[in-house]
Image (cartoon, rainbow, N blue to C red; front, top):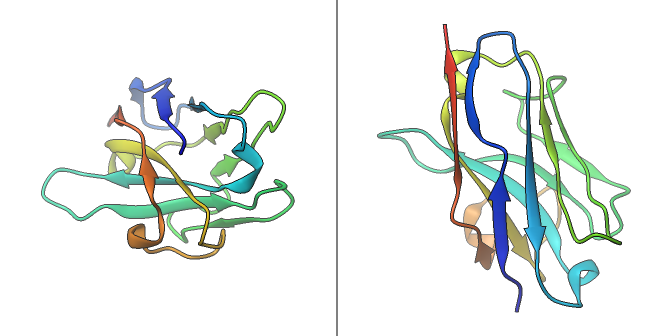
Length: 125
């Protein structure tokens, strides 16, 4: 089992940047594919980015491709999400997630077994 804690959310102007981080507990971090999701008010939770167990492969939603970068540090058990060129439509609660059975390119939230509590990102226009 793994516990996930997100940090780094906040308020930023359009065009700005934020760096989210996900800290994972446990000694088997490299067993998990990791992902970031987000949920805006009144909308379903949607996939943002996924990264393989080794960190060698990543996958992004079309809406964030070229602006967001997911990475992982398996020595520190962390998964940063660097967000650049932010837009008002990026406003949402961002969640870190982990799965032992899914792959980094799978976008369904139902593949993921463990979730953090979420961190709010607000982008003003």
